[in-house]
Length: 370
Image: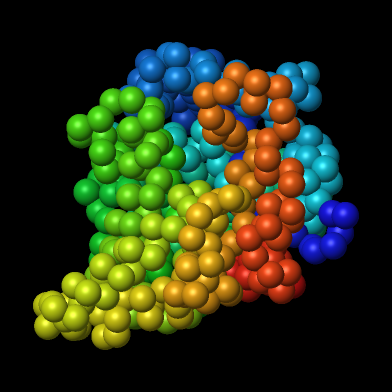
């Protein structure tokens, strides 16, 4: 049944073992390796998360993936889960690494050390177990824009085909900041895909974090709204205009928000094009259709309307393995995640030729998978 369609899983994650930081950080930075309670020299990696919320999420993950209790979320377990899921290729994003680099107060030099340590571990150790199917998505150091292009060239030599950026401002710079222009030039010239990926409880400026404090509210705001801001930044700041061959994907936020947001941006452009005409030379929705991709959620409403609006060749499937976000029913903790029924869930909503695009064709174009 699983081989009815080939599957590229566009958005999975690693849970980085705690010992990798001391092992892979350069000698001058080993004292900054995170402690078991996820602190760096006493400073919390995460922001605005209660002990109860953190413990509940950890419990859900281990109950969903009991095999990880013995040896953790190893590369072998990742491949085994891919086989169970029917996935042929997995693009792998960070977990802890995504939050370490989201500490806005971190010194740029230290952020660079963590960036290099994560990338070295990801490519040299984790993905090397099965490099044809485990595809690491690298990190770059937005705290130090001058380091981004050299690190990009370095990780390409290690096997990188895509890089991960947070949508949030870093040290006051949004994604269209002129300091990042050399990076965008390099990504376009080298054909590297850029995956925009948010994470709740970061220590960067995040939509909603100035007025809400529960995980319920923070997660509801952070993922879609920060993606909306990121897309706006890339359009309003002229990044997509200047780099028409750049490929950008917006992941783990669903796709239904795109209907309203593109409509709204087009409406504002019609009224205020005179203000942004140097950077925005066509309706914002045209930029998305030309060079952007977006991840969908299984069972998400309005997929048909999204496809009608932007076409069927822009949607990506991502399982978010091994992360889980279940509802309140306690009995769900005893079940396998719904993501294991990938094809059936999509076929209940969409024609098989569109499912083929979502599960393979679109991701193969986005990541330039041979």
